[in-house]
Image (cartoon, rainbow, N blue to C red; front, side, top):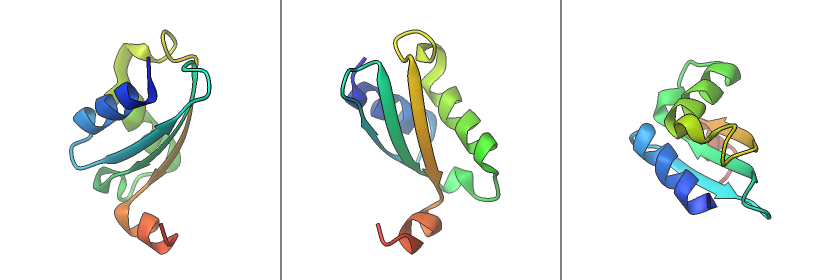
Length: 80
């Protein structure tokens, strides 16, 4: 699985989300996801939403996924 494929899955599963995924080996991935769906949610709940969007690939094609999840307001406050 490629970073672009994971980005597509996340964005399809979380409408309105922006995802950036990186990997040096296409097994271990780092994702930054910005979505209004994260408003009012704690980090664990945000991660569950991202994992839900990816589906069965986690634990299969994706061995490890590090997630940074932000609301658009949080992302903007970071100056990104």
